[in-house]
Amino acid sequence: MGVRESFEEWARARQQRLVRVAYLMTGDFQRAEDLVQEALIRAAQRWDTLRDGQPDAWVRTVIFREHVSWWRRVRRETLTDRPPEGVLSRPGEAPVMVQAALALLTHKQRAVLVLRYIEDLSVAEAARVLGVTEGTVKKQASVALARLREIAPGLEELVEERS
Image 1 (cartoon, one colour):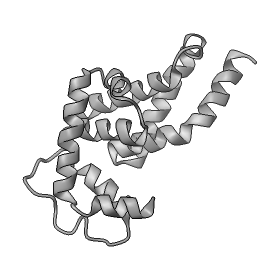
Image 2 (tube, helix red, strand yellow; image 1 turned 90 degrees about the vertical axis):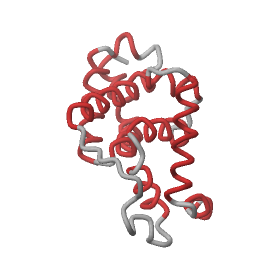
Image 3 (cartoon, helix red, strand yellow; image 1 turned 45 degrees about the horizontal axis):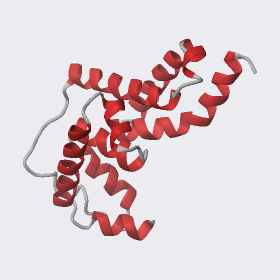
Image 4 (cartoon, helix red, strand yellow; image 1 turned 90 degrees about the horizontal axis):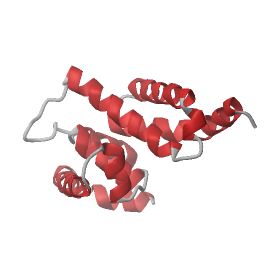
């Protein structure tokens, strides 16, 4: 199998999952698709060296870092001391509630939770993707989970019911 065919096969198998991860990080489907597209273009350009390593981790790192670069330029985040009224009040809609709750976290907290609990990466792997220490990942995860418990105390039970 040639380099191009190898990359195309790998990309087709991973693209949907990568878009889902990017969407959970960004909260914006179009932005997520753009991030994944950019990461896949970069991976294609380096595929001869990436394919024998850990291309999934490399692409996740590119997605995260490009997203960080973007939100540093844009800075749309507005910090408040309370979540908006009614955001988490729809019963029986756990995925929507999870998405809304994640949107209320900082970008770093959201990225840590997505990588640790949705992508199921270890602390060390998440730290490598994010370019931070393992202690930072642990602290961000702890703070983010505490914030989620504060924002949506019933969220844990809803997620467990749907599992």
